[in-house]
Figure: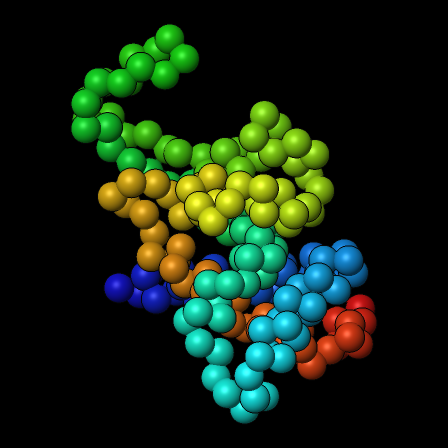
Length: 174
């Protein structure tokens, strides 16, 4: 239970911190993020809460968070147990073996992510609304981490930060 609670705290706080760092280092991404939030806030009164439909429409915000999760993978990997014999690159992994899935390496695959060490949130816009399926930060299949849905916390955090700043808050961090 402690592991579950701590992992949620650690991953959300680290992702938020790294997103601020990447936005600070990439003013064009901050500008576009801010424009997206101002457009959404412009449809409502300032005191109105952010609604589910608003969060779903924030494609660039989601792209920034996905790119941060890809570059700054918080969980390096996970252990899994094979449920059947499987072949991988010409080797057979027997049923019942424990394997380590190295998530960080999957998120740094040069075939899937050209210019893989650069912060390019726009790459996620090309993948469409289903881009979470192209990211390995939360695992796959039946063991998908609930943190995949927790990334909405980071998204909500940035909707409250970015409209109030023209970069001055991030500039003070330096």
